[in-house]
Length: 490
Image (cartoon, rainbow, N blue to C red):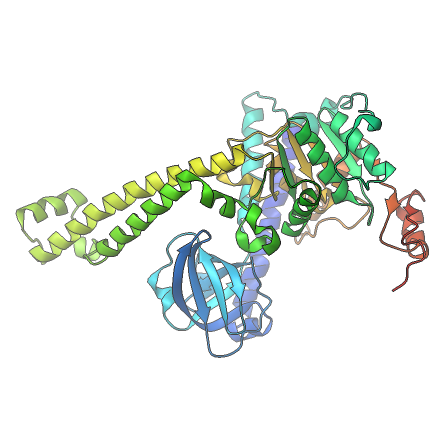
């Protein structure tokens, strides 16, 4: 396989899918009135914003109205906020809470003043971040290939590079399992996974305990001194891994990346946002932020040097005129002095911003360095601060629900890959007809044609009669129904 050609094909497919999703969203916004889109549950009209606070999630604003809100929009969604025409806005926020007549959202940066006026509109929006991270990863790999490099990841991506990745299996009898209720196939999968040098695939049909097995593999890898990155396509799937890990080991040091609104409330104390609050560097950053907010408040009492007030003057010219107590071109001396004070305070604000960012990065680095396991969605593993970290093992759960470009994001940060999935189930949903043949053929499925996945065979979900057809049709009759559900009925 020509890896460069394959990457270019993936890149084109990602671009096509991104274009198709944006087009679908924009077409609906163009064709439907705000009222029609609200009836479909994808917009909320006539809101007014109220600033609540600055929290760990960002700048928190509450939008409300007297009339009840009925919408498909829910906690964790990306939304587009506008003065009425979403096609003219680029203001994005994340929903933290959804009430009967209000929603609370977080902004990464201070929101503009107009959001606190009346007749604000909110629309359900496409999250473009994942597409950008996929493209960035592919471009990075293409750059390495162009420069003649051969990244470790190619051993996994290219079937021609594949050798016998498995050493002799660790004897099951020698393993001390954290989960004492694993069946023989799950135990064997754990043994084979930790024995593999670079790649191991687990084929887990419905109800066979894929995530439970994955959690045990993670625990065994940590016991061997390895640092693990655990990912999945959805937040729910990542939370499931974390729940199984907590069930079997409370001593494990773990951090869950991602926006707090997308993490289960029961697991929030393991989130980066929660853990970072106890780090000394972050506490110092928060004190500096309070200082900065006060300076911003005082700065904004002065005249901001906008183009209409500057009249072509540079910053240095404004400062020089202010020192001399002079005005110019219809700008009074008091306004020049006010603009100069705004500039002086703004310089302090910018300096503090840099110091705060540096301290926050140090705090994040400390939390991740001290963690045995980092958990995130495939997309979130591509967040900027993760670029400096390399993991001994990457474990991707529900891998057959993720496109190949999505899996490449965390794969860039690891030396070994363990994937769990079921390529006999439906592939990821793809909007673009052009991209479908490429993106619906997942990395898990492609690798399974070269490296035979180990199959979990005991299922705990369906009674024997219900499982009979899919077992014969998709799993060559290999599935065994556990006695606890053999005759189960609703």
